[in-house]
Length: 199
Image 1 (cartoon, rainbow, N blue to C red):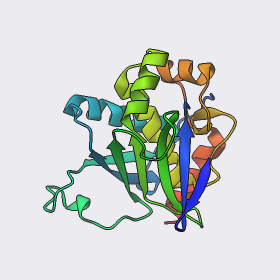
Image 2: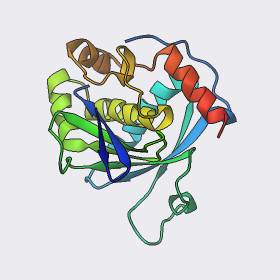
Image 3: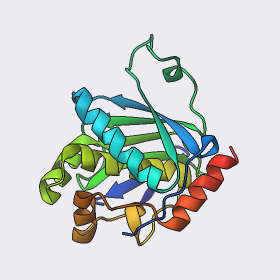
Image 4: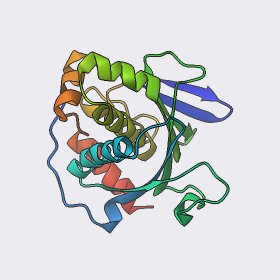
């Protein structure tokens, strides 16, 4: 679902399979993600969520480099101060959406041209999904993070009928989240790799 607000397209994921052949990731197929958390999560939970999202992207032949950033004026990692770019994305974990239904788990903020570098994940909705599908919080959080990053890397028309980029996740997708088998389709993986090679 997309909404136009002040020149931005906001792409959201609802309670959100296919198998993809993994390909070797190289420098051209890597992207750096700055992760901010407004929710008090343990370092272990964040690290496991990063690993989960990274595993999903690695299956598509893409390597994610994670940088944990703090919302402060003097970041400890200089990459936290760099301006956003096509291969330097920012993701923030917030408690809940201010103006969205509880069934929405995240938003990617895109321009009219389908370009963007910022995404939000709504932790309260992630906890609800965790209870519904009995998957661990890091596993659910990692899947939702991967979906929103997919929007930033694929653009505004990224929702598909199969795989992790489905707009609605039903019982089949929730079982796949629990098993850790919800991935990008081969075509989506190819599109992301091609996009990363041209930026």
